[in-house]
Each structure stands twice: as C-alpha cells, then as structure tokens.
Image (tube, rainbow, N blue to C red):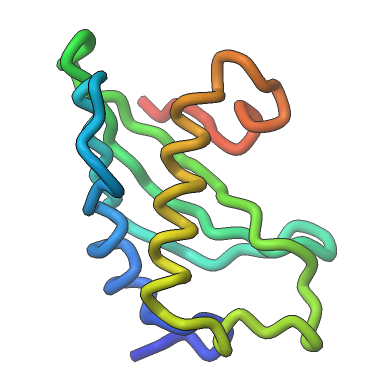
Length: 115
C-alpha cells in the first residue's frame, strides 16, 4: 500500500533504493532495510535504516539516515511526483550524503551511526 503522502509504498521505496545509480570506484554498497516518513517541526524527511560498506572498508556500518524532503506543506504534495523520479532523487541524495558526510557538517547531520 502506498503512503498517501508518497508516490510509492515505503517498502517498495526501500527495496528500490538498493539499486546504485551507476558503478562506483569505491565499491560502495548501500542496503536500505527500511524507510519511514518522519516530521520534525514543519519539515518532513525520509528516515532510512542503511547498511553500508566499501571495497576499502568491507566491514558493514549501520546508519540511520534522514533525507530532508522539505516543508510539510499540503500545497507541495510528494504523492504527485513520478515514483521512479522520486526513487532516483532519494538514491542520489543518499549517495550524496555518503560522499559528503566527512566534508559538509549540515549533510553529516542527516545521519547517525547505529550500533
């Protein structure tokens, strides 16, 4: 069942987010285990449970990543988006978080390392 606020079900979104946009030199593999729509104040986000590893660091790390989706504004409904475009944008943002977390504090703040 699709969440009324999203163009795709959370389970299907988590499944599709496991597909890389393109092969990566670092061998990054991101496995999304769950997705949840969350709200913080007037902002909405997508909370993802992610397991990540690279060729240089093959030991998987577990992360809780919240991708920002913008203001919780009924005039800006996410459910009107094309489902595949939404998946690609979320995956691109997830890969951006991975690449920039060590360099951009505001992007690093999207996630916490789980134990």
